[in-house]
Amino acid sequence: MNRRDFIVGASSATLFTAASYGRILGSNDRLGIALVGCGRRGRWVLDKMMKTQRITPIVFCDVWNEPMKKGINQLGLGKIPMVYDLEEVLSNAKVDAVLLATPDHLHTQYASRILKAKKHLYLEKPVTLHFEEGSSLEAFVNESGMLCQTGTQQRSGAHYQRVKEEFFGGSDRLGDILFVRSAWSDFGWQRRVIDPRSKPKNFNWETFLGPAPKIPYEWSRYDAWRNYKEYGAGILSDLLTHWGDVAQWMMDDHNPKSAVTVGGIYHLKDGRSNPDTVNTIIQYEGGWNFTFECSVLPVKNQKDSVLFHGTKAKLEVFRAGYIYTPHGQSPIHVENTTSLDDQHVANFLNALTKGEALNAPVSVGLQAVKPSHLATSAYWSGKRMTFNSAQTEIIEQG
Picture 1 (cartoon, rainbow, N blue to C red):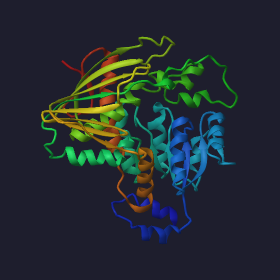
Picture 2: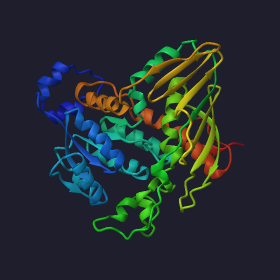
Picture 3: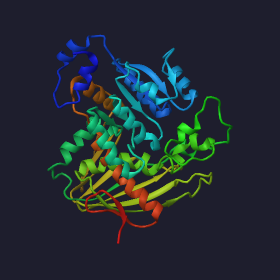
Picture 4: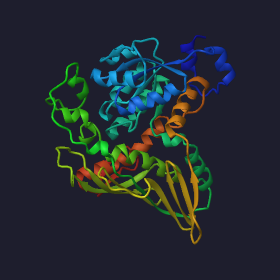
């Protein structure tokens, strides 16, 4: 069995031991990783992978050479191939897996090609821009036999896993959960002033547009793509996906029933289409409400968190730890000092080489984005939106 065969084989349910991994790959063998989408997030996650000393960057792919150059310099890679065509990544036999960190509107199209080429995939969240893409993406993963880790890194956080075990799944420490509140605001990157700029040299506008509407070049749509609904849902996907996933995971309820969303472009009159401020309320089949409050403006909750209100206690969970407060008693603080991204990357690499189960497979990624799709639909329609009984279509509530 060669190295490539072993990695593909690891997508089965068989658990490979560290000893067998060492015998097959050799002590100095590393996984070949391609970065597709070389922006801030892609470079960040690749850096985390590199620090494990278990991967070798093989090739960078982007619509423009500048972010590729920036990544090469930032990560100290020296000379590494830079390509504009995804096919040059997929035909490279040294690439075992792809880190896909493009704008959201390209996710499904690129993921399908990567999986068909028999490359494993680390897919940044949100996994889809449109709800109807979900079934196709899941089918691509299942048919390929490849592993697909999705970018909801809380799933690999030890303290999140501890909260799940100790406070949910049969525990009565919180009592009956009445509602779940979440807040997350203040995003300087999404409120930058984007000055017009002529199209740079070595920039492929048509490739950036991909399946989105074909329109003339406009720099802000590239440099601040999250501001435009054609390429992403802004704070209703970038942020709601994370906190909605945490709420659903803990509550063991992945079936949002209906949503109402209000908000708008209240302050940033810069041509964006996505809102700068939103509030959404999502009702779940299990009988609880989830609220999400967010603004890219410089307002700040004491903590960016998910807060569970129960009849016996409340529990506030955030990336740096959690606070458990039984009614009438003093709060108990638990701190987290570990990196969620480090843990999530390690889980992906362990899945590829040791048969460890993925913490956020495509099924989890698709569950995580469901509340985002429902809330976004409610925002743009201005109506209460709901899933049909089979949870396969978003419709206006009658």
